[in-house]
Length: 92
Image 1 (cartoon, rainbow, N blue to C red):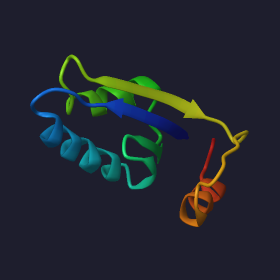
Image 2: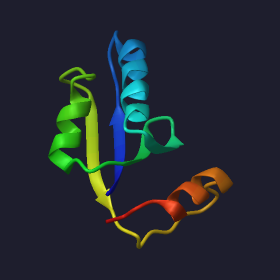
Image 3: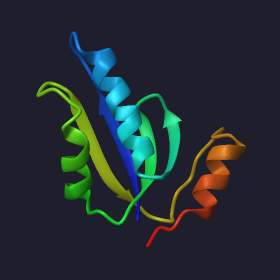
Image 4: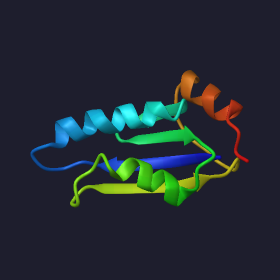
């Protein structure tokens, strides 16, 4: 399954927590970075399991959204690498 993950890290430990989130995103193995805090990941985990896995890297005032993405998507100016990743992703 493909999920979109969006997060916003705030506060004095933002830099450290952002680094932790980058490592956590890459740990899923298959990922595409859309923007600094917007990612696509491929995993067999549920949305809740993915949220629980990621939120250990955040403070209580940080924001995290995880949603399942379908193969019905559209984008503009995503770049060849992102498009190639999305086109070969397993949405099931």
